[in-house]
Length: 480
Image 1 (cartoon, rainbow, N blue to C red):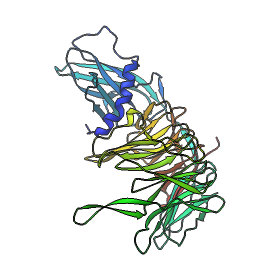
Image 2: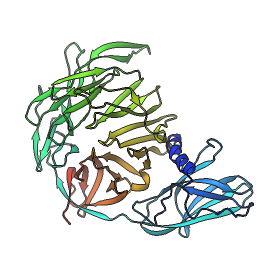
Image 3: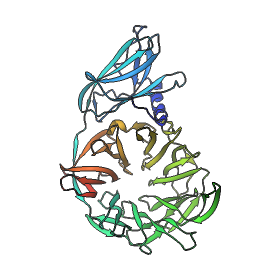
Image 4: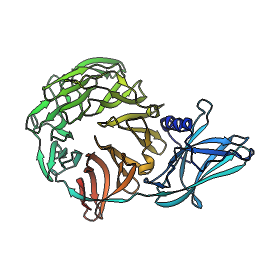
């Protein structure tokens, strides 16, 4: 049985407890009159509906009967055994919770058994059936032209305007946008390498350039916004203290005007960035200026800003441990970032050698949080979607156990990801709770997701098996 990262245990603990406290166990759980000598479990987080619009399964179990403690749990699918994860949790407030999830994907009707064994060898099964449905959603694929080298389409808006970068024959990255499938280069100050990262619904583009100065005190990544009207507005540079390690192992702090990273751009004309020195900058495009705020964290970064002015990302509270971060900014003429507010308790886990951070915050307050931890066989990634009311959904059950590059739309509660096992592309419609396969024409395999627009338009990195072509593509929902 595969080992599992400690991060995941705590990441799911809050959800399991919420279900246990609400007593929302499955109808197939044992009734009150049971053999006291036989181990019994009650199941939580299992949807009562017979049909599940998802590809896999996750549930929690609690021992509800038996005189001896349960020492092992197994998931059995149909008549055989399935590869599985069983996540044993330490008792919390005296409640021994266990989270189980399938290390496989399912289609159609299946009988699933939770097999409990106690320390005296008694075995008991709790069985239920579910129908797994993941229909196809037809899409058209448009290969996006490049400048001769690697080409990345990192974001897209509802009009199909994509933003990214392309590398030329001289190995320099140039920021580009595609509109109607036609490439257009964005201007830079002096031909320096640069990339476009985000595009909003109005066509404004956020990116960053690599700059240097002769005295080495003004260098690094400098964010800027290419406005739809053709103007260019810098976000920084910001003078920030940067920790440096000397060759002798000493730590020194030097103030550089450098290293401001581009975070995100919303539809209200606000962009957010952050520095290595722990400062955050919010740019008001309408006013052409920005404000900076300090932080008391060891290190942090911001990946997203919604139209309500909330910025989301991550922070490290020591050298090894991170947690999601949301900076609340209630409506104001110039948004001010308030004190950090923690995400729901289901997402606050990072015990050692792992990373937890918010990838994007939506306009309604929903968020995509990604967690990754190290295992002997590589790095695991476990994305979690949180609804505005605090409910959390572990997305491995929506996409399958091997998720690659999950991305979320700013509105509409859409999340897209790649199944790393077969290079298929999937879209989860959170408002409906349904997963669909992005059905591209035959021959396309997908490597990573770039952006997700509120209307389901996507960008991705892909390759065509038949022709050998690989690069950035635009995916547009087809009319049925």
